Amino acid sequence: MPHVITDACTKCMSCVEVCPVSCIHPGLIEPELDTAPQLYIDPDECIHCGACASECPVDAIFPAEDIPADKAKFTQINADYYKK
Ligand code: SF4
Image 1 (cartoon, helix red, strand yellow):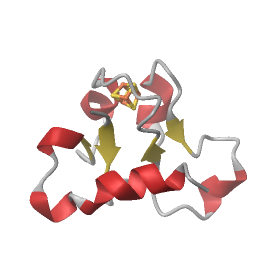
Image 2 (cartoon, rainbow, N blue to C red; image 1 turned 30 degrees about the horizontal axis):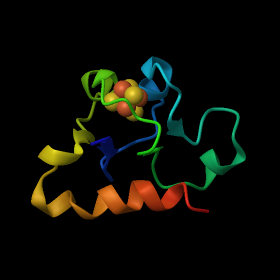
Image 3 (tube, rainbow, N blue to C red; image 1 turned 60 degrees about the horizontal axis):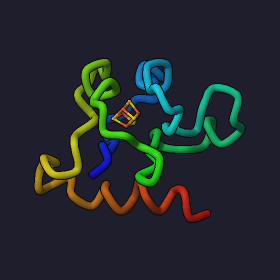
Image 4 (cartoon, rainbow, N blue to C red; image 1 turned 90 degrees about the vertical axis):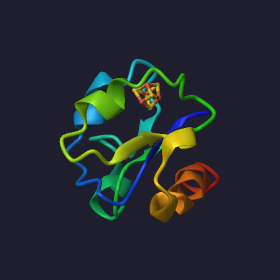
């Protein structure tokens, strides 16, 4: 299962810099960064390494299987971002 970014995300980009497979978007040069409320992990590309969660300064990122119940909807919200 992938990691998931929740609404605690402040778009600080720390996770984007450490992801070994570049599956966190929008990135710094993507125009969607200005309007996106948070960053999102592509569940089909994530290799579940955990580097992003370790780097996040606000603990916004969880393994999908450990996401708090009140944040569970963000698993689908992350996936939906990549269906556009
Ligand atoms: Fe990228 Fe690893 Fe985080 Fe998945 S768990 S988004 S591969 S840094």
